[in-house]
Length: 295
Figure 1 (cartoon, rainbow, N blue to C red):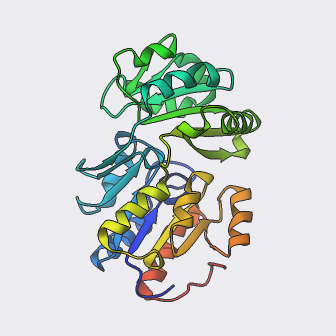
Figure 2: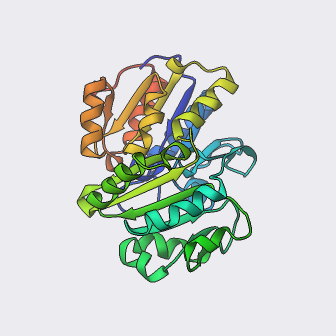
């Protein structure tokens, strides 16, 4: 690491958060606060929407103008809600996705509004059977609509679609969509948990990713790629990692992403349960390469 790092981008789940619980460790919190105090821009980038992310981030004590990239890059705001960027899936595209995706798994659409209807799906019971913790945590924001195509009757466009299911089924869904007439109308990002046989396949407006959102922010701040550190653990972090001069994958990351990191010469940090984010940030602040991180 070098002392001239000006921006650090950090994923939440599997990176900033431990494997169990929803409390960011004090060491991670302190490291991020110290980075901001040193003049480094801290950017949080997550697949979560803002309302689902902020209860985790609020206790950290980040500055109100901290940038939060949500829904894997479709919405960017400050952590206090100040608008920066927003992109949507056209209604026609979202409606066309419904019959194609429901055969692969549980389908959810996210709208950029707060309260009931922010998340729309066809069957709460079906979703609960696959992603119970997510359903329980988001129940107040979920509305059931049958058939799902009717969620777009009012003409409101979603910021994100999602289909989730087993690893094999979601890889099949991704391959099918990539070869379908819809391929040019969407962007796909996969978050994979092989141990749980669970994959979340996010479907976004074309060109949207954590990486594209991070690049826009860096350009507006006049920050070069080489002055950016990005830290993540899963495939939905790939474009963000590739957009940074220093890419760091968590030791607990998706196994094939760790293989990709080795091929690209990216660094590997200690796991999320070993405060890997703090290890990286502390090394940036000291301007040295830390032991425990490998090329």
